[in-house]
Image (cartoon, rainbow, N blue to C red; front, side):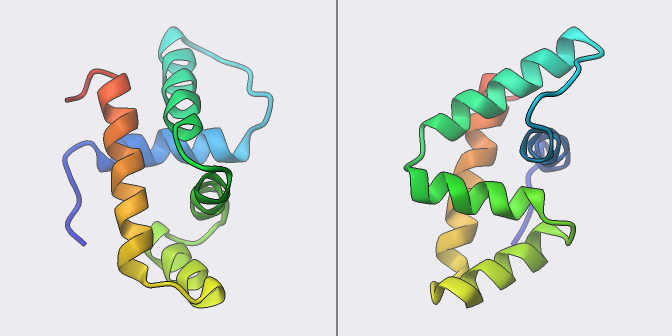
Length: 98
């Protein structure tokens, strides 16, 4: 899948969000990133949110985690990529990157 210009930044934000339940913020940007991720994820169903958090919480790369998730759930990787791309767009929009 091709990645957008904001993918790396948003990926970093989402990994931090998924891995830290109660973070200590070191800057206003960190707070805004956290809020953007939280807001974007709340727009998804509980099931979709759980899958998305799994993708960003696990230690492998995003594509590898998508592969593992799709395989374990018996769903297509394309449908998972569609969710990931939608989440990235929502976070990027909330952070003013779009």
